[in-house]
Image (tube, rainbow, N blue to C red; front, side, top):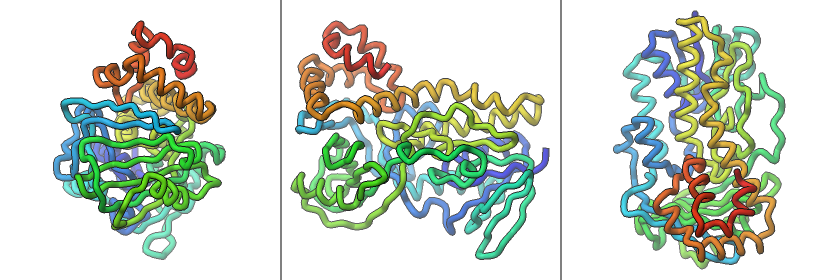
Amino acid sequence: MGMITIVGAGPVGLQAALNLKRNGLDVSVIEEHREVGKPVQCAGLISKTGCRELGLNIEESVVNEIKGARIFSPNGTELTIRKKETTAFVVDRYKFDQVFYKKAVRENIPVSLNSKLIDIRKNSLFLETNGHGELQKSDLVVGADGVTSIVRHVVAPEVPQENFMHAFQVRAKGIFNPDLVEVYLDENAGGFFAWIIPENNSIARIGIANKMQENPAENLKKFIEKKGLVLDVLDRAGAMIPVGKPMQNLTFGRIMLVGDAGFHTKATTGGGIIMGLHAANACSETIVDFVKNKKSLSEYNKRLAKINRELAMHWKIRAFLNNTEKSRIDDFFYHAKKAGIEDFLQDHGDMDNPSRFMGKMLRNPRLWGLLPALLKMV
């Protein structure tokens, strides 16, 4: 096997590259931006459980530790899930990405910055590097180039617009509860949701995501005004979020997709760091097996079964919220609160893996009144 090229130097692409390098394979990375980790286009909330399962050491990038969440239905009915211990970390995404980049540099993995993929033809990659055309040969390509993936565009059918959301976020000074994330299933969110993710008691990330045909910046302005938030905005960022069903085939000859490029994102929240890193491990393991043991690259799809099961559950929950009238969502929140859902989620909730608690919900007599809605999600 000759050179393996990873397109995209985010955490997912670099994780795959590190795994391949450590298994003795020749790997290089190309990144369209001038600096790894910029521009920042992510809310930066990741689960403590996911970090532990992946063995991530993220101390230098953590800016806050979260102990729970306040979730509001469209009419303002509140569910509060608060745990005694940390459940999630708010990270500085630039520093988080740089951790992976520094590891790649230490491992002598070539990372070409300001190098954009234009096209792939057989084993030839056509690039624009520092404003000049370039041709690079590669025996295998991994597309880890994000939501607008060029690699996916080359090999996969066009993805319908309804599988994406448009998000806009500000980082701002104000007054916040540093322990709890706030989530709003608000009418201004245009089919998705709004969030407040605190960095501390005086700075938070406030954002909203909506359907592609709507204006998230305008919707966020309305949301902030409606909530009466007094903010001093420090910076702004916009992004697309993939929220479609998990893709069942991510191997196309000797081209593979991973991370946001392969829809390894939770349709409930748009979060993709933990799922993407798990998928990067599955992708790299498949490539190592392909090179060393002559296994098929299609084994990648089988290795993704567990991840896809959780992503499918997130998608079903999202479909339920999108296809249910707001008054019925309000009603669900009201009855869920009365049934003790807050205490249940405090004990059993998992922000990445809903299958770990959905079954337990169905077996809890106090929650049986929620069965009609729950069965739509499983």
